[in-house]
Amino acid sequence: MFPEPVASQTAGLQYIDPPRHTHLRRVVARAFTTKAMKRLRPVAEYTAAELLESMHQAGAPADLMEHLLGPFPIAVICSLLGTEEGDWRHWAATAEEALSVTGDTARSKAAREVTRRRITDLLDTRRDAPGDDLAGELACAVAAGEITDAEAVSLATAVYVSGGHAVRNNSGSMMYALLTHPEHLSQLRREPELLPRAVEELFRYVPHRNGVGIPRIATEDVEVGGHLIRAGDVVYNSYLSANRDPTVFPDPDTLDFDRENVAHLSFGHGPHYCLAAAMARMQAEIAIRSVLDRFPRLQLAIPTTEVEFLRKGPIRGPRTLPVTW
Figure 1: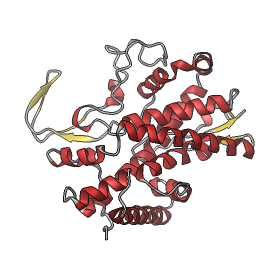
Figure 2 (figure 1 turned 45 degrees about the vertical axis):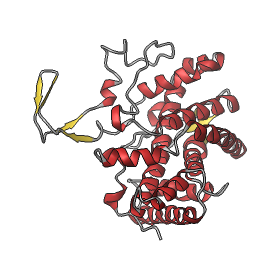
Figure 3 (figure 1 turned 180 degrees about the horizontal axis):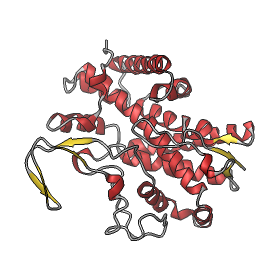
């Protein structure tokens, strides 16, 4: 029986150093192959279309976060995990509470417990019936002695939380950026082939985090930019600032889909480079393309100044995004 993870075990790969980080990362990477992304794409496309049709049926104005950008990443991450077809709806029903740090504490705790139990049960199922998905890969790794039961639950939980919370908020920020730059929306409609490049520019342009990022501790003395950082010093390396570096990106505060260099650091760099980068790019492309195709006249239903952003929690994004068409 897979155990319930404790808080310290659910920190995720970003908080673990080599060599254990390298080992755990290698296990999780087995589920993020090119083959897996090809399998997920039609599922994601169908889900986005289905969610937008439901939004259309509900009528305008509608909250794009509620109807699309909240449930959509949960559906994709559930497919990656290996849940039963359509079961993502049950997960999505508690996802916002489970990932929230601003809602009711008791409800959030209960939702997180439900999520952990679902992940534990899924991994238990995969112990006897491995599948070509993340839960199957983790169960096989446990059986082979590569990771512990607790690590399997922790890794699955971290992927689920990161995939749901980060994609929801990043996609919401991207859509807000597009809706407040109508000339860019028009450009994408005229030049649909520009979308992959536009998504890269949006990843660079959109502030990803509330704050500067994850603290790091120097393991040895090192000089950076003429400043001595001593071993043991705590350092914040803000890739948000790096993405707006004027020495790398001319006119960095301008959203420019024709920008030549879009070598952003939104997915990190080096050993901690985001394993799900390809999946995040795919989801952003599908979400934006689906919205543009289904609602060619989409616009904000409220003044831009009234769009409220989440101020707590690690990832920045709109709390709601009311739109009309």
